[in-house]
Length: 161
Image 1 (cartoon, rainbow, N blue to C red):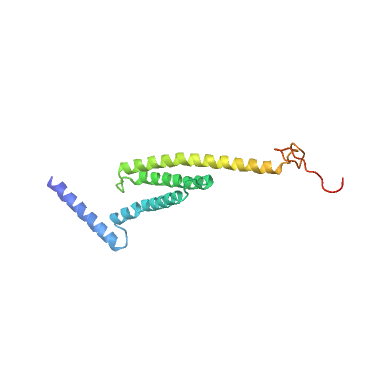
Image 2 (cartoon, helix red, strand yellow):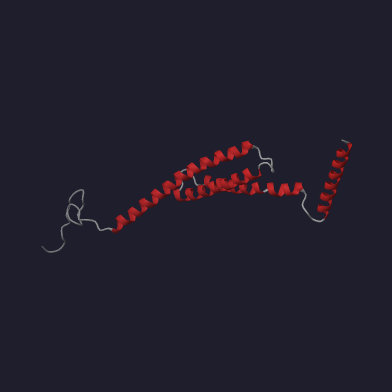
């Protein structure tokens, strides 16, 4: 038992010496490595915050195309953040409630994205039909081609009869 304790102490001392010599030669310590890896979540969260601010600036009746694009970016950001968090949750000590909350938020954003993109598609189709209708010739109306369709008034030619 004493030998195993001595052996563990020697191994522990060797690890301390190794880590301290590695830091002297410019290698990052485990705490610095963890801090560097875990700081990446901040970029996801800052991007997400910027996207949410842009979405909030759209107002009550946003253009569906802009909303579709912004929500598409928001969902993509959420997917990337969730994937990163699932990979690094143990190393960065991320609470499971945070990941669950982000998943729920991202699912809701996905539903809104679907609605916005559907509305953008419908708007584009209606605009296309309106352009096509404006380009097609119209048949003569009641009262002649220049007549008023409501009163049926036909303009009288000016000049000598």
